[in-house]
Amino acid sequence: MEPMAAAIGVSVPVLRFLLCFAATIPTGLLWRVVPSATGRHLYAGLSGAALSYLSFGATSNLLFVGPMAFGYLAMLLCRRRAGLVTFLGAFGFLIACHVYYMSGDAWKEGGIDATGALMVLTLKVISCAMNYSDGLLKEEEGLRDAQKKYRLTKVPSLVEYFGYCLCCGSHFAGPVYEMKDYLEWTERKGIWASSTPSPLLPTLRALVQAGICMGLYLYLSAMFPLSRFSEPLYYEWGFWHRLFFQYMSGFTARWKYYFIWSVSEAAVIISGLGFTGWSDSSPPKAKWDRAKNVDILGVELAGSAAQLPLNWNIQVSTWLRYYVYERLIQKGRKPGFLQLLGTQTVSAIWHGLYPGYTIFFVQSALMINGSKVIYRWQQAVSNSGLHTILTLLNCAYTMMVLNYSCIGFQVLSLEETLASFKSVYYVGTIVPILCVLLGYVIKPARSAKPKARKAE
Image 1: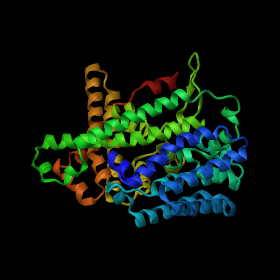
Image 2: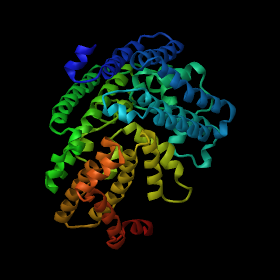
Image 3: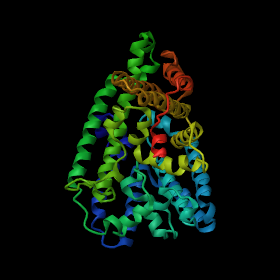
Image 4: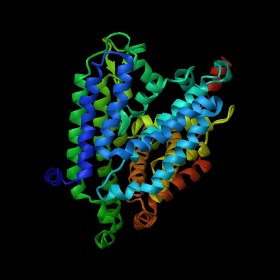
């Protein structure tokens, strides 16, 4: 494998992972012909375990047993508190693995390990346990829409749980999905009870997208290498040159993730799990939203920072909204910055304990709040010219702060992150703070329309 790895410029472990990752597509296709529900559960789990073994070695599956067993025991022994217990136990185990493996350093040096798959598994076991706890609640107790939709009234069997946790289509890099959807898909119930549309064209589209994304990443990464941030040449440039390089560095890095998620999307679509029903258009079109983890144009042309979680790592963002953000909101109170910061902190810990991750997600909370201020100004102005200016300003603000913040996510260390921020005079931190502060000073007038409706 060494000549092949050298030819494409990756290490042998990364090449092995890429080959196993690509194998999730034909593996997902073969799932469709497994004859019984029990057979499909076993196939899903065993194929995922086999690909993990081939990619990461035998110890990877031993690593997965811990949170899987802990979550299942929590559901059996303490149903009412199973969600909280599993959340603390699974995240504690993930944090210990992050500390032990320090995967970020390995990834930067061209290595890879099973912690990425463990991250996906952690979210799955937590959501399953929380939904089983929610099964005790009654609808009149103020359940949110997601709780009503996904709650479980009975504990999944061991075979069902095994297949759900290690299902190969999403085991390596997501997307995260719900136990209830997995059960209906495997047992051919719900939207899968009748014949489903052909996955061929959407699968091909995802694969073409993956090829384009990888091509762009390989081309751009040679022009904007991450190593430049530690070179004297970078600090010889002027402010605007350094800011442009930061912008292009963040832009370049995203294409690697677009590639990974496009391959995952193809695997989940071809298995059928990605199908989410039919559109309301005439004629109706098949929707494959469950497989979608990123909307590339939605990220790169985002009109505000608040749109980014809706378009980037979509299924994880949805998980964070359902199982962290919404559950931090006290009944009768509106969500605020603390709920957003708490959610971003959980996301940072989930990614790893490097300072760069923490800084990125704290920056994200600031970025979103600053963008919301600009958006309120947009909505308040009646002059079309000024509205257009504020719209463009919000878009430019979002891209500038996002790519500035991305540096921490890439270099990881505190020293390198702060050095890169300092090189552009912390502009991506100061501007969001100024926007938030200005929001308290320049408050747009509230619309009188709701009152008028109420009076009617």
